[in-house]
Length: 200
Image 1: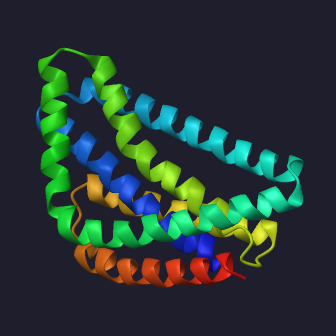
Image 2: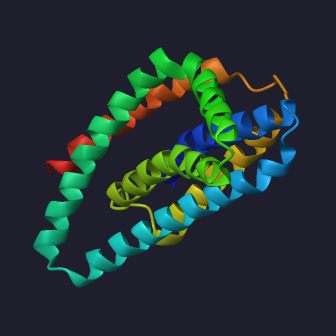
């Protein structure tokens, strides 16, 4: 339960940060009518990630046990690489995320393309969603029961959603910098645990 909670909390807050930046910038420039495009993109990303997650789960039940174990091992090692890389990337690039997203919104609006806004939201949120799907699949053999694992993941997303609302409203109560610094360390510890599990 702790694993799924930490993963969805971290990834969920990153998704919430992206959504808050997109919606907040549209609000600040008087373009709230494009909120629907952003939420459509978020919905598309969520649907794709859920489909991939279901596909992985179905495949793990249908394939030969040795193939599944090999794939899980590969997923764990890949997750280690991404988790560790993401921790250091966030430390270096977090400050530029907002400016980059705003510039991409300006470009989409300048071209008069609602589809571009949908794709912007879908790709920005979808990247974090795919990482979440991979991490949860790779960590599903950590020992927690299926119910506890799912509840942990849902709880992490719920807390992330509350934080996201606060960010959109402009609240400064959430210590964003401290959170990403601490969670980076936690992610590396999780990565080490996944790596150890992948070679046993």
